[in-house]
Amino acid sequence: MDLFNQKSIKNILPYDGVTNYHGVILNAEKSHFYYSRLLDSIQWKNDEAIIFGKLITTKRKVAWYGEEEFSYTYSKITKTANLWTPELLELKHLVEKESGETYNSCLLNLYHSGEEGMAYHSDGEKMLKKNGAIASLSLGAQRKFSFKHKNTKERIDIVLEQGSLLVMKDVTQSFWLHRLPPTKKVQTPRINLTFRTIDFQ
Image 1 (cartoon, rainbow, N blue to C red):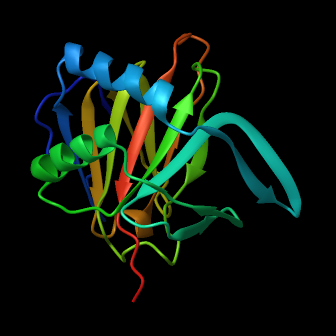
Image 2 (image 1 turned 90 degrees about the vertical axis):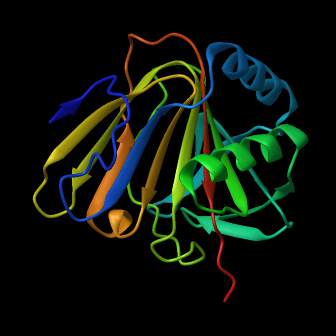
């Protein structure tokens, strides 16, 4: 099932979860502004993961920011959050208003070209708020984003436009995997901001 360049889509998943595509929430001018500022001001680092006991360093770069300098572990690597920048706070408030949710941290990804992507996974770390919302804001290159049901293997593809917002919540992470498939058709960078809530209870 393909959903390309759709507007005002509410819940693109047919069952077992809620993933709302809000379409473009930042116009081209604001998208370019935030893209440039984040590219220059964020403390980007190559991502690391331990896979089958081996340390892997990716070409993709990441950064983690939040309201506190708390630690967050995924792929067996622990990261400590930087404090919000003014631009990230502005975007957080915009995303909270648009999604009707609240967030206390943001994991940012920098993909230098379409050849960099992300394999199928679900965001099920224990520190994340259970069934909490994860809001994905896209800046820069337009990329395809895919979902695959863990049991039925049904796939949903959507193109995430510059300035667009996708919000995964409820039981989505329990039933669906998602990925950013690599492509040689895209030669420009993309910044993805994933606002989320860390639960310390």
